[in-house]
Amino acid sequence: MTDHKSELMTTLTERGFLYQCTSEAGLDTAAMNGVTGYIGFDCTAPSLHVGSLVQIMMLRILQKSGGTPIVLLGGGTTKIGDPSGKDKSRQMLTQDQIDANKAGIRRVFAKFLDFDGPNAAIMVDNDDWLSGLGYIDFLRTVGPEFTINRMVTMDTVKRRLETEQPMTFLEFNYPLLQSYDFVELYRRHGCRLQLGGSDQWGNITTGVDLTRRMEGAEVFGFTTPLITTASGGKMGKTADGAVWLNGDATLGEDFTRSPYEYWQFWRNSDDADVGRFMRLFTDMPLDEIAAFEAMEGADINTAKVRLADEATALLHGRNAAETAKQTARETFAGGASDGLPTTDVTLDLLIGMGILNAAVTAGLAASNGEARRHIKAGALKLNDQAVTSHETAIADTDIKEGIVKLSVGKKRHALLRATTS
Image (spheres, rainbow, N blue to C red):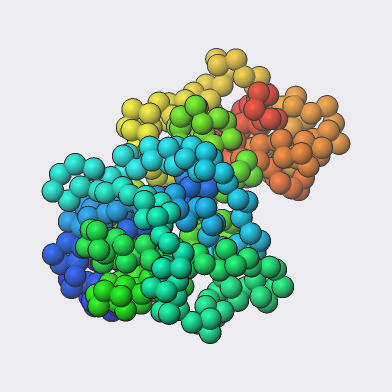
């Protein structure tokens, strides 16, 4: 189905979110009068990362189109651990760890959703109903609606069996609990839609089916495609680790990215990703995005800056985005005045210069061998991105406003400045 009538389905489709839907026509009709939908977020870390942002943006679109978004915190399901997409069991967390993670995760949603107004967002915790379930009663009520035959065909279970990796009985229960979440949310809030990533399709469809069987209700499931970068990498992952959405240093360095680091993540997007990321991760109008997609050559950098501005403004605010952009401009264009060591290199030598030679020239390594060791340790960076191969060479697109920034670790930085002679 391509011609949708509802604002929700039109927007989700045009911006590239649609991958699977249990009934496009049915959901399109339901969304005409505003539909309530949810996404679950298990509490496995004290912050969400960019990999979760596509789900958060769907809730934002749902609310902007007149629907009511529900943020379901998985305080209960985290006690089991979602096996989806995992070849091995997740580490079991204590109740204190889960509570701390839950507190950290809550903060980000106020940046993207409105929790006041006629279709105010709702935040609930499935621990409120799951922890109070009597196991025997739960099995008697929900168990008959599932067959082992169907469950072993689910991708998560099938993958573990094919790779001969163990799946505990605890994990095997996860689809039952996630499906039951949909039933409870339908009962409590009239929720008729579950959204998620494509790896959740099996869990979502069982929830749709269970709600139909137990409540006689027509509800819907919707998934997004797996979001990867143009180079095939996992979205939200860099050589430095996950790109966390939390900018609050109280969570510790391991789960925090400053507004500047966040801005730089988007600024360093691959050329081929810019338009797609604008549609998925910003509120920019589609016609404006199309104009940026038509840019070529050096002009694509203008589009990358705009992507970084808009994505950072959504999470950290417009002032933080402008400050991050100014910091980047000063770092790359005015590095010498900022006290960073700067070495002039003619443009024809800089373009194509091997990374080992560049590190030595910048004074960050005494020899090619030392530069190799920095690369092997993951410490050498080119424009704040970790260098993974000693065969890397500086490209013209790496020269930003006449400057290339090289770093070793977090405290040693140097600039190579292109000159014409």
